[in-house]
Length: 168
Image (cartoon, rainbow, N blue to C red; front, side, top):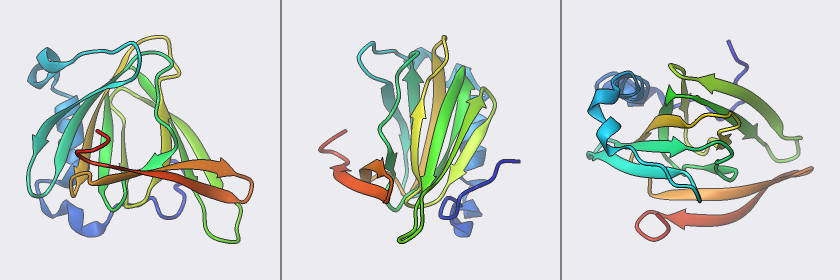
C-alpha cells in the first residue's frame, strides 16, 4: 500500500455510476481490443484521444513514448482515475498546504495498475522506461481546465490555466 498525500482522494459520490472511474479505467485498459485500432504515437509529445464523453465523465486514451511526460499539473475540479494498459509510467504526486513544506511521493505504475485521484490532485506523469506505454484516463466531471505548476521550496507556484476547447 502506498502512502497517499492529503488532497488526493476522490470524492465518495463518484462511485454512484457504474463502479466509478477506477472500474471504468481498469475495464477498458484490460480490453485493448476495444481501442487498439485507435491507438497512435507521436514523436514530439504524448498522444491522446477522447474515447467517450457523457454527462458524468470523459474517457481518454493516451500513448507515451520513452521520455515523454506531462508538466506538473492538476485537473481542476475533476476527480478520476488512470489505468496503465501497457508499459510503465512513473507518477510524482505533490501535495502542498500553506505554511508547510510540500509532500512528494513518486511511484512506478506497471500495466494493470490504476491510480484514483480527487479534485486539484497535483502530479507529473512520465514514461521513464525504454518501451512505449499506454494508459486510459477517466475524469468526472469531464475536463474543463488543467492548472500548471512549478515546485519551489516554499510550495507550489501556479503557472497557468489551460482550458478545454482552447488548449487541447
